[in-house]
Image (cartoon, rainbow, N blue to C red; front, side, top):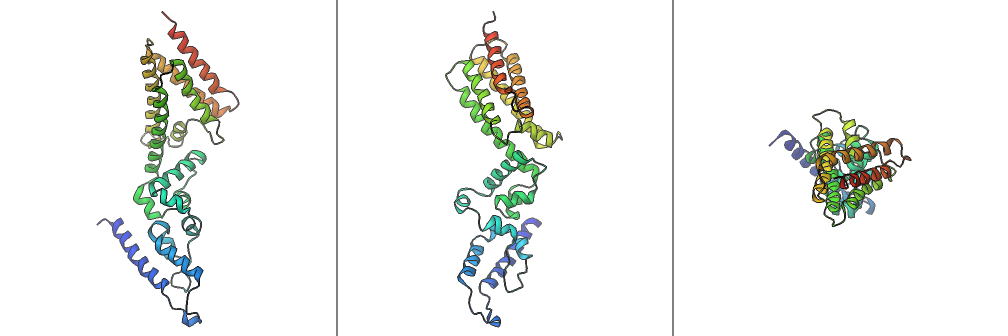
Length: 275
């Protein structure tokens, strides 16, 4: 058994004994021989959610030797009051990913600390670290999830029986939709790579994977439509695609993506009509 597993086992056993003592503690010395209904409900919730809902280290550090059990502030805000329907629908990994996706891409990777993630996801610290060994692992999982979701949308457009111009226009329409959101800061992969600028970090790897996947989508569309020099045109389309995202982030009212859409379709028409 690893030291981490041994520590988790020890924490669980100790917390179980402490829980039993608080559940059945006789406070006759204070003239109270029973718990109130509210206290019973709280203790029942603690028993049901001990591992998944309460940070054991915080809980044990809040004075359990006293007559009243104090829940940690994080437990009060994010654990026992977590939406029960969401808890049933999502596991620890899904809750953490959904929370990280929102915080990383709206507030920034560096601005988002592990404690904030754990708090807003409503998971125990031990559960978090048993799912993601580090913040970099979580960044990797978030970017992979975003990449796969983007590919699904691109594949849907690619599989259509529409004309090449319509398909290319639909790809840029996806960017128009993304840029219309108040949280838009540009291509999420580029933004992440700027924050994690090390070549050995997840963001740099995923920005390359994603950009090549977009380019290859253009290549397949062009080849399927019988366009010559498909790879060269795909590179040009990729540059238009990426440039529009940068401009839209820096100059939101520039109409950059709409202009890029027109440029891309014009490029296709010029190449399609070339001898």
